[in-house]
Image (tube, rainbow, N blue to C red):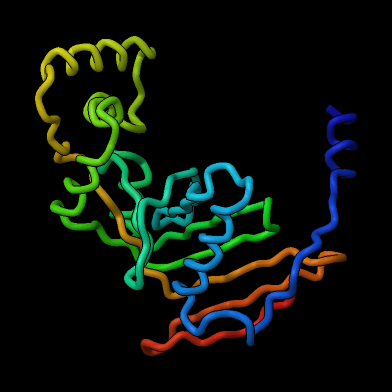
Length: 216
């Protein structure tokens, strides 16, 4: 264990990137995110849509997990999940959350904070229809975040549902759907030499985005 700790303490690399300045970014953070997302899709970065979703209960206990971005626009960022999962329960109690993207291929990070609300049932069902059939059945089969006695519980439930649905259309489960994070705080982080990183912050103030720079 000690040797591993010593190795970890010596892990480091230099970040060589173009500058990120207040003058070079878009006036709206969603436009800036759109540009960065287009760029990351052009390089060898696995799962660029993967993001850490951080939620908290009212007592302050925080939890995080990786989810997948499934859409974004000027309203915010959308992802889907089981409404009975831990993350959903926490967001129903405390409708504030944070998203973090990390794209090491470009030495970039994006941090997003804001309020959470459910997307409409129609929007959830529309997206559900685009999912692979296996993922559709899986959404019905898993009581996400609940304790189960073993993997065979899920496998048996999956087989039962496959027989039940047959070749017919699989409806969107009533306990499954989307969330929209509506941002009021977005930071764009660009790794730079000697750990003097560029950090550009957008803060929503009375409906307008204010751009400032944070110290690295």
